[in-house]
Amino acid sequence: MKTQRLKFVFVAGEGLLIFGAIFLAFRVFLEQCEGTQDVLSLYWPNMAIITMVVMISLYFRDLYSFDLKQGLIELGARLLESVGLALIILATVCFFWPGLIKGQKTLFAGLIIMVLVFVSWRLLYVMATRRHIMSRKAILLGGGGLAADLWKEINASWDLGYDLRGVIVPPERPVVKGEFGTTRVFQGFEDICDRVQAEEADSIIVALDEKRNVLPYQQLLNCKLMGIRIIDGESFYEQICGKIMVEKINPSWLIFSDGFVRSRLLRMSKRGLDLVASAILMTLTAPFLALVAVAIKMDTPGPVIFSQERMGEYGKPFRLHKFRSMRQDAEKETGPVWAGAEDSRITRVGRFIRKCRLDELPQLWNVFRGEMSFVGPRPERGFFVRQLVKEIPYYNERLSVKPGVTGWAQIKYPYGASEKDALEKLKYDLFYIKHMSLVMDLWIIFQTAKTVLLGRGAR
Image (tube, rainbow, N blue to C red; front, side):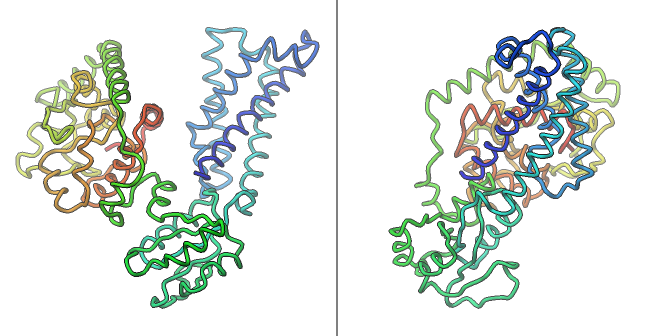
């Protein structure tokens, strides 16, 4: 996907520039080195580690989120926080490797050059993307909900790599002024190819809510033969949003689309990683788990571990274990209900362990037993699953893989406690199931670690 390539170029380019800034500082202030080759051969591991620490610090302060809504003051504050975090990490590393940084002058000169590089590179990137220097010129075909959603996403995400040159709506649909903002709207499918050429576009995004008896096959075929890319709207939405639009797709789209392939090697690798990692983590965290258990016991009466039946892979029920964060018999009067933002049933210790995600740690035992995986859709209670299957299309399909301690929906969507939230999370869960891989699992775990450390999204 073009947007991913753009972001990769941006991050890789910034990494090279940060490495270059550190190299320049080493080259200027290390008098014992006679030349460029001398510096690189002796200190490239040092410079690589410093570069990695700086980039991790930038990442943890959301400076790779590509969000232009943040103002210059907020951006500057995050940059200073990143520099501070990098200094703390580097100081810790230097305790074990005293020769990592050669002198204070080298460190501070490198940081000053890096800040200048950071600001200049981002200004250049923003200018290039806002002026659509590296963007594909596209025409959006459609006038319903899918077209409106795609128009919003393309206009809200300035670095998607697409310059929307116009919207062509069906002939019988009236043109509403301002419906697509300042984007020009054309009516009728008779001259699609001429319109695309006039706008110098190279792509058509087909975003029709209903294609039967509406899709202009011959016009699109003519455009295709002219070398113009024809992009399916539902697939395009999936690629740019990281979720599947379950309200718009039909079973045939799921059947014939790529993905949803889980080889035996993937299953074995995923299970092996779960087994080894859960065993190691249970051993390492055992003393800490004991402290949490004592805190819960001292705070409120009741059991330390809360166990509840959840639906696992293919709907098989299992007992999920968590540290108890609510008072005992929390649902005695209400029956099964979702937890709210300011749920009065949550205890004092419970609020803390939920914020830090410590209440999830006993699920390591579920992972070890093979009832769960580290990454997958969150396991839901049978009571809610039976309700949601009736109301939400394809909800049952999320049970085709093992549930997870964390998941794609958990890092992409804030905590939800309603049917609407369940629909949004399903979109992300189906995307994960479609594209599941070990690389994706590792990325989700890394993102989850960031979320936990920053204390975001918990209730």
